Image (cartoon, rainbow, N blue to C red; front, side):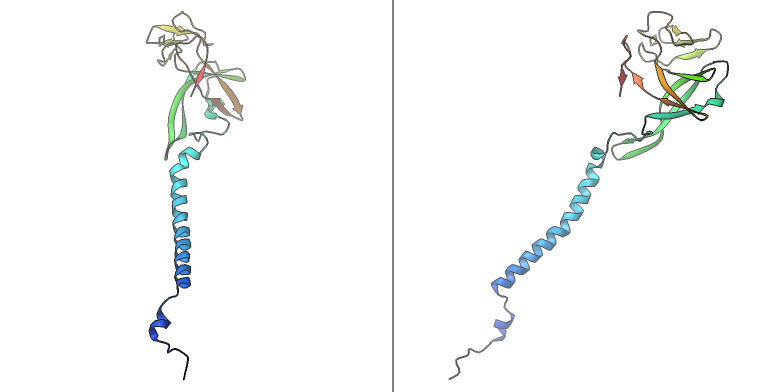
Length: 188
Ligand code: FES
């Protein structure tokens, strides 16, 4: 008598518990890897603005090109210049955005710069050619050519900025300062 059991087609096709387990484990691993990559990429993209150092793309040393030395009047008359830079707000890059304006004066081989914001309450000062003074229209205050206040309404002189001459270019370290304060305190 043949002791072997007949092999049915059902026995051949039916997966063993071990094979089922291996298939399930492989599916979990492959599925996990497949979903891990896009999740990490999405997360990095989402966190990109936070992971960046700072939110500005100004020159790494903080100086901005303001003018050519040769463009400045040689008699020391102030010239106003607008400063622009690229800036980033979260995911948005703004190119050539105006960040402020300054006055430059060339005195012999030197260039001096002032922020054109009045240190009293932040109005813009204008250069008044006939009197050769900077004039603040908000409270009728004035500053002489060296930035010294001519009355007591502004709590301090005009804010001088650091200048570097590189070849024929004038670079300025642009900063804003707290208004209404006798001390010159940088903000931002
Ligand atoms: Fe300039 Fe007041 S804002 S004097």
